[in-house]
Image (cartoon, rainbow, N blue to C red):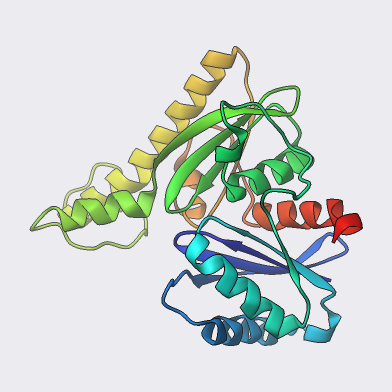
Length: 257
């Protein structure tokens, strides 16, 4: 069994994997102010709640887009499981063929998602990671990452709207009573949910148009479950995609780790 951790700007996704089976997927808030001990306690609590014995964990792997907390969480996790963790970065084998202007600019989270997406769903493929940002990764029929798009995440855009207006309230992501809202809250809910869904549908259509073919589409990330059900295109949802990618990368590096 291995411990897999993906550190995003908003959430930290934690899971344990045994023989390619994801035992659980849990999320913590990313907090750059937390100490190593505080993160260690959080990780230990997650394992206990999910009934995982720490002595059953043979190793771990971390990907991170938040450098200030990478080392802190790496040391915290090592303190909990008593073993060094592999960190996705330069020198780590991923098996991914990256064909963008500067391959080093492809963030670890997108690398991990692409590795899992190709393995799980094949190619050509579009991977949509819906977190603090909404990032599209495009993989061609040769299993090569050829580029993508990055746009403001659902939560970021909503927070900006609320903070820059004097009369718009905070809202939940529950669906509105109907598409055409008849009050402020329902109007906002419709705009956020259906508006982002339409945007994703439109982006997918333009990707297909540029490549001259239809691609499979898979979505992951904390905001996917709120938006993807309202999309009209066929999109697979995979909440554990990044953990699957981390598991694959961990296996590909065992000879050197």
